[in-house]
Image (cartoon, rainbow, N blue to C red):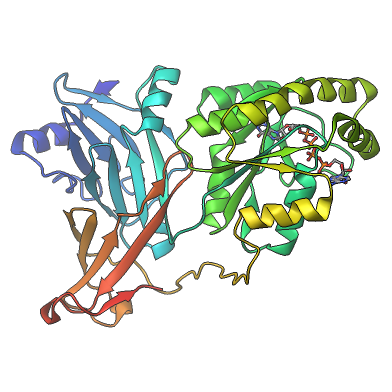
Length: 402
Ligand SMILES: Nc1ncnc2c1ncn2[C@@H]1O[C@H](COP(=O)(O)OP(=O)(O)OP(=O)(O)O)[C@@H](O)[C@H]1O
Ligand SMILES: Nc1nc2c(ncn2[C@@H]2O[C@H](COP(=O)(O)O)[C@@H](O)[C@H]2O)c(=O)[nH]1
């Protein structure tokens, strides 16, 4: 907590418009919700182009630095901001490529409210807007040794451009062939506990005597690559994800029998006898919960591996003719520098002129927010933008930016 810099007081006294630049700071904006002004951009000694967040409490006259969750946007040449639905601020980075121009600062979404309660402090969260209708993440759970990893490997091998694996953190020791950063982020318990306290994890759980968790970043990395995220997590983790704002599909994998599960675990040969016994004991409870908790949308029986894999593909809509279309990443088109934004229902109209977009005058970009999904932690998906070539010709001639 601290005193508000003089320029903010000055702006408040002279009255600033929501989402508009603070008059005395070219690169900072203020968006007012109730009695709080959310300041994005350089305040105090911060570099003016950084996108730090501060909250100015108008009734108390105090400036608060909230805990900022999610991956922070990189500095930019300037930005514009507009309030959406009282719970998030849409921020558009100027001079950025389309893949990095739309961000949401969540200030009162369900996720932020929960984190505020858990962490006992003022919280905001960044979530990057991802274009197109990337399918929702897939959570795969099931007892140890049932074949989750095997099925996921098959999927990633057959559809490498479609799926990305959420690399979990764990405090267990690596197995022979496991690589840090690929199979898991292997970590010390104290370091992981600290990061959990800092709100870096979407979910975490103690599983078979070790700590496992999915960091927000692990899910974001996959979304940023334009891929569908796969999470291999236990039932406790699935329950936490279900309760979070991550809109996911939940699949539980069952063994044909406990005898077969034991056979597979032993044949894998990666655990000591004591660990095998522990995992088998836990499997009983996990299977009961998997079948009856209501968490899972689908249950798959992994008896014959090929058959189970075909069923998994069917659930994921991959049984027909698949056209894998990796997301086109527009090159050379920068989001323009001269932005003015307005909001009409779920459409944001961005007035701009960019030499890269051929028509330099009367140019508008429409940002359609009607099919937004997800949000912090993770990414906000379902963004669509269109260029309106010429306003004078009426609102025809929509071109999807590519
Ligand atoms: N349908 C199947 N029939 C026979 N063996 C299988 C089948 N599916 C997987 N396996 C084998 O069972 C063993 C365990 O599989 P896997 O490691 O994929 O399990 P998992 O569910 O990922 O386990 P964990 O949760 O411990 O990571 C592996 O040796 C794998 O080759
Ligand atoms: N709740 C979470 N569970 C996880 C995560 N990553 C893996 N797991 C589960 O742990 C067990 C054991 O895995 P192993 O690699 O030691 O055999 C298995 O059921 C996984 O699904 C996580 O991030 N969160």
